[in-house]
Every structure is written in structure tokens, then in C-alpha cells.
Length: 195
Image (tube, rainbow, N blue to C red; front, side):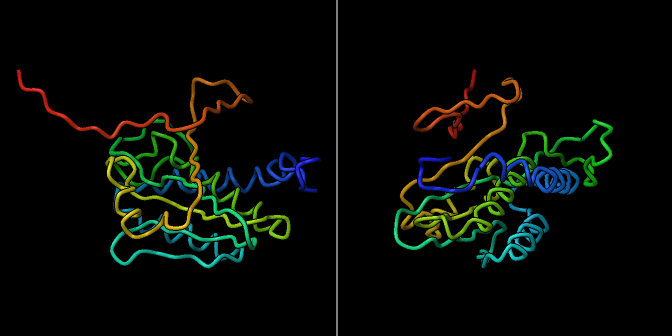
């Protein structure tokens, strides 16, 4: 991080909150909710963000929320995590396995939400070093392939210069990360073939 205009060490900051992120991931994993039903999940996220000092914005007819870290003038970057689970019966035997029969975080959204809460914590603790704004977006209904449409229509991306998301990838060994510019890992096309 030296030479980049920041005095903090992001790796050390992430390592310092590893326990918090793990605790959050386990909470999300234990309390999964299907697309457009993530109201308890959103309540939990709001509670955690408010403990950090964020003002949380919700939607009148759907779950999901966002908060803004305002570091003054500069670009606005959005960080996005999806929060919905899948209609899958969990059979992992984990001590933090799903308490909701027939619903499981089988795609990693429990990790995504926990990691974004971790980023929110690091950002707030280092707010004085942030230039510009960071919008933290917790998205409902990613698995339906249409969840993002609602938030865009509600103006979520108005004034946002760039948005970044993340996805865990079980085939990539720790500690490696894969970065590529532009769109990737998305397919929202639905079609029917009649034979």
C-alpha cells in the first residue's frame, strides 16, 4: 500500500477482521433466504452496517439495501454483493448448517455478503484516507437473473462511476485471485427449445 497515497496496510486490516468475516459468513449460511425473501438477511446487514456508523437505505417493496461512505470529492465506486440463497436441501453436517429447510447458500452468496461487510468495516475504520465515495450494495434476487433490474430502476447506479462485484471460485486454490477487466461470469438469457 505504500506509494499509493494510503498509509494503511489493507492486508493487515483484512487479517485483523478475519474472525468477524467468518462469524458473518456463518450467520448468513445458517439463515439463508430465497430470492426476494431476504428480509431477515437485510435486517441483519442493516444492523451490522449501523453498528459501524453507516446510514442504511432500504427499498419500499423489496429486500436489499445500500449505504455510502462519503470521502468527499472524487469518483463514486460501488461494491456489490448478492445475498439470496437457493432451493437446495443442505446435507453438509456443518455446525452452522442452514436452519431453513430446503434453502441453502450453495453458491457462495453467504461469503459475498460477509466479505462486503468486512470491506465496509475496513473502509469505515479508515474513512479519513478515502477520497471519493464508496456505495456498498447488498443485492437481493441475483439467482432469478432479474434482481439487478429493480435496483437500477430505483436509481441505485445514478452517479456511480464504476461498480465491482466478486464471486468465490472453488476451483482456484488459496491464496490466488483472478482478475479480468470488463464483464464476466454472467448469463441472464432465458430461452426455450421445443423438439
